[in-house]
Image (cartoon, rainbow, N blue to C red; front, side):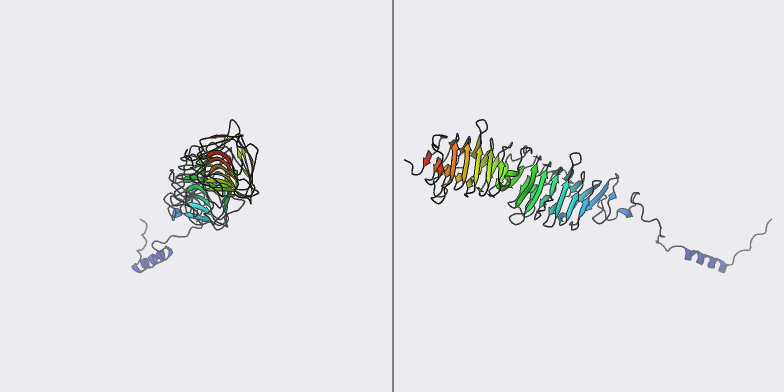
Length: 435
């Protein structure tokens, strides 16, 4: 039998235990790992996602994280003050009202989901470039897929020519007005009476707003507008100042909204343009004043004037062309079929180079200038000499005259015989000073 080693003394055991304790980490201490942090493609631990929201999305300043389904996510929680690009392989959640004060570029196929109080507002130093493709549109939507689930997208102060919304979907917004305006919309352009806004909108789908699809203030402008679908919004597809009507194209679709009208706020018009026949009428509110511009109104266009509204030519450089036809007359009418519902067409100065195959009805609410109430009032005083040619048109239902002409105005010979009249309270056609 082999000899057993001699037992250790108590002192020797204490020395050994002390040596072991000095080589071990303290309680709760983790030994450093030279391979930490893990590769970004590796699965993350609970500590990895600390600070992320309940869906696993990290906040601004952190790298995107994979959620439980393996999708990259990131929250946008702070204003954008430096140029930034949003990538299509990341799902973004916008949690706040975000001011954009730098260039924000969004890649085709990117999806952004907005929480209830969230919105994007492009400020004076901001530039917004969202150009998707037909196959990969950019989507701006609500976390809750219902109308009014977020505020919307607004251009307030930014007039950058680079601003563009192309092949985008903007949906489920319109919760509350943005940029100092009174009306809410999925897309707001311009900030009340003080802040401009400019953007090009092409091949966009704008739908499911709790209010308008698009709202433009009197300071809002379109640098381009083509091929858009604006549908299933609770109010009008688009509300805009009259100065922007020339941008609306016939390749866009405006139907199937809560208010089946293009809502037009009265404004001064100084840019040439054509008001096209669209699938729904224009609703004209207030005084639309053509000044230094040539405005052509296409055959078949229908303008419905709000109570007390009017259309005025008020400059020697103002030109209007009403290009109706036998099969597609232009119609200027009141919002209600009541004599005197609106004021009428007032040619205070300028030229109507042709008012052909046009129906003007239910005007004559007030005498404008020094004239009499009528559906068509030509002239104001001897200091202005407007020129008007009116043929094959129909004037009816006026609370005043069908046509009233000041003696200083220039009209086509036989104007009273070249047109048709019906049910005008004060008379059909009156030329001041005529025998």
